Image 1 (tube, rainbow, N blue to C red):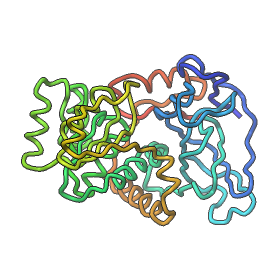
Image 2: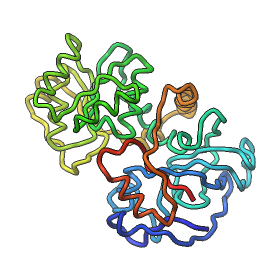
Image 3: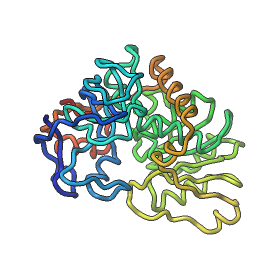
Amino acid sequence: MRAALHDQFGDPTVVLHGGEAALPVPAAGEVRIRTVLAPIHNHDLWTIRGQYGYRPELPAIGGSEGTGVIDALGEGVTRLQLGQRVSAASVHGTWAEQFIAPARMVIPMPDSINDETAAQLIAMPLSALMLLEFLQVEAGQWIVQNAANGAVGKALAMLAKARGVHCVNLVRRDAGVAEMEALGIDNTISTAQADWIAQVQARVGGGAMVAGVDSVGGRASGELMGLLGEGGTLVSFGSMTGEPMQLGSGDVIFKQATVKGFWGSKVSQNMAPEKKRQLVGELLELAASGGLSLPVDAVFGLDQVAEAAKASLEPGRNGKVLLRP
């Protein structure tokens, strides 16, 4: 089969290439999915660099999420059928004509959800929903996030709004405010404005910021901490800068603040199956009703994977970059 591969760890725009790979065969409890679309996530690119929590054996096929049609069933698989339209995330090797997924990780997709949405519906939106649960916030409370115009940030803003949680969304470019508003996301503020902190404080009014989500690291971590109220929680979700979190000890001490890390894979593994089914059901319902918008910036073929990786790394994208076999 055709696949997007890398033979070494390094710059994804350099080491990724199209090639041939053996057609995988599902083991007991697994299914094989004929890929229709697969997204490029930031964690996929970090994996290819060799700098993520998971390091595949080389040569490796990239990708961790995809949507398609089941074309083979492993022994003991009963609740899924050949020809069924499904999506799967937290798997490996989705940037190929076919990929393998544990049957328990596969989610049937209703016809009301298109392929472009189905391809990216699980990993980032489910992470965002699990993150919202992790924050333990209630309707009417305020949270703040940076890198809000990323895939998880947009999903978190939409999901928070659906649950009645107020979310201040920080973006680095003035143009990002209009991009977010076009998706129906309000309370977006550009940190390029000199008075952005005052704008945040004015937006919240007399309310207290109970939690912050940091996906940037470096000085931005301390800026979020400074916005939190007493007893607030700062969650590290990622580090776009690659820099350590820079936190003022005074803020941490006198606010009695809590700093936590969030890794969706670990949280997902520890989550009760019935809870995960509930969250997935919430996502499907929102996506089908139009309450969760997951735009696509561009679609590339497998042999264009290096070009696709470059497009995915471009700032100011309006949506996810997808691969189509």
